[in-house]
Length: 263
Ligand code: FAD
Image (cartoon, rainbow, N blue to C red; front, side, top):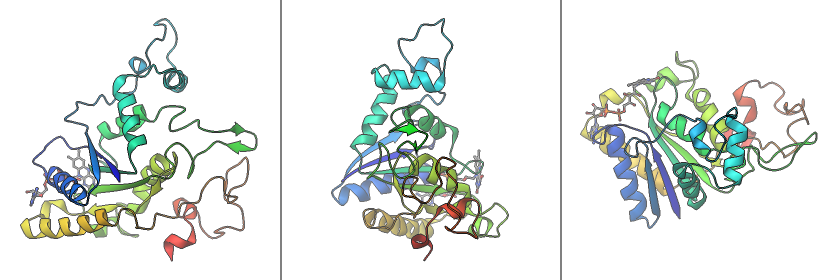
């Protein structure tokens, strides 16, 4: 299988750097092909701007969506964007690995998403009409591929528990899991979390690698989070609200996860 590891940490000798090296070794030892997008090492340009769409008249108003659409359709994207899209198409599974910074992904990785997820590639795919909101949330260009987050956090696991002060980790990661990954079609696996990173020593690092290795071994068999597909009848058209009879007592993020994932 082909695995793309998109990695966002500025320091190769960091905990993240060690875990990234471990993951590559483990996946390759299992016979998988691995490509790594090491965003800091690549000096990845994080800002989406007019330079990303080639061939546009400089006098025209830059439209981030429509210029992205034209550039994607006409092969006029910046080379780095097209390369990352090719890697995504090549991959059977994609891992995003990053330290939790201000309760989300580092800016450089957010910039990777914003620039690589072009109109026509990751959104604006399929029929858009009064009766259909396109191929997204379970359908789309990246359907059939798996995705998983590997995230380190300084806070304790209890801080991210259902009543923890930071809010539940599933809620904090929902915009990435559901918005960034499920939206363009990925099957999204439960995240691999490493908490309380300030308390890492050799023994804990070794145990962490064992657990991560198991998750990598299970990449193809782990049950994805049961997000509800947009076009499977669970949502009213065109409002895209959950039908009244589905998860009637659930609101917010949790309502968009079906029963099978929560037992
Ligand atoms: P490092 O600092 O490189 O290492 C962590 C520990 O692991 C160190 O003790 C190191 O000695 C040890 N270690 C490293 N490699 C090995 C190895 N190979 N073997 C054994 N031990 C090793 N945390 C939150 O919980 N929520 C937030 O919102 C949040 N926001 C942040 C925002 C910013 C801007 C920053 C800088 C930090 C933030 N943090 C937050 C903390 C952050 O998540 C952690 O600092 C980060 O996850 C640690 O990962 P690292 O790779 O940088 O670890």
